[in-house]
Image (cartoon, rainbow, N blue to C red):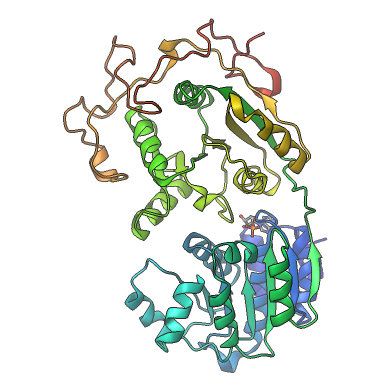
Length: 449
Ligand code: AMP
């Protein structure tokens, strides 16, 4: 079935065609007709299902009809993070390209004064994080009294992040007869309570069951000791040569450290975590999206909601023991029917995680055994330790070392960066001759046995 059958207007249909959307995804097919009838809707859907376009289309179709109200905020989308708010705004702007409706992202971290101009000059759709939206309400710089459609995106995550009070305060500022849409990957009781309080006889659409659909993602694990992990990881990258890899680590500090190490080894990498300024976060995301870098080392800030086209690999450098977090992380790859690989480093005492993950995702994780020689390790190219965590400008000019890109020959890697126990250790994994296996497309990996 094409979008035409859903009764969409010509400007929206044209934009969808230009975006390369030829047919609706299941949530769009089920959800859009209900939304266009004005129903409240609870969508149990993860990212990657096309839910943003589902609610974006509905908002745009509805708002395009009310010409006299142009420039008044008639739709509000609440999202848990700035990155997601920016992403949703981009998607709505693309779908609404031929409609002359204005969509603005309003999020914390950006100078609030900068948001005042666009807000006062007339915006139809505001997409924002709860904290900043509330700031604007309190400053009286955002009037929600004409909101016709309110969307709570990633509702479970917003509640996890402690936004419940903010969300309630915000919804109370919108008209009671608004249409309310709620999207959430999971449906804990707090979501049900919220929906009872703020939604009118909501329809429910489910596109994924509790065991989440990760079928298009090939999943692997590599068992390592703590001391071997860094070398194994470097080898993996050098051999895999991922087009676009999202690497998850547990801590903000860990993200900076690993990113530095990767840069030192000549990889095009940046970090993303919550301690970075908004500017830096935007720069990292932008560089990753535009493929100026091909590795993003991130905390779980990036594990949900983010949609970057073409992420070929998700690597869990620090593997999470929370299966839902695992599912969200690996969901950054294998999107919209494309293939993707998820590779998790597991310490020997973490083996039980595998069976838990397999149960939750109803899939099998295959073991990769890395065989490599010490000479296979990517050599260091930057010897100076930088002061800033992700200053791209300075990266090109290492202070004491050879010019960027130059390699120090013949020294091995014993003076490698400090990591995991203070020393860059020689690999204990295996120094057997590297052999390539074609099984499962793993031409880069040698396997023992
Ligand atoms: P979402 O679940 O909203 O994060 O969407 C995931 C990705 O699917 C985004 O890159 C969308 O642009 C894309 N997408 C949404 N709907 C469609 C569609 N009908 N056909 C192809 N791609 C789509």
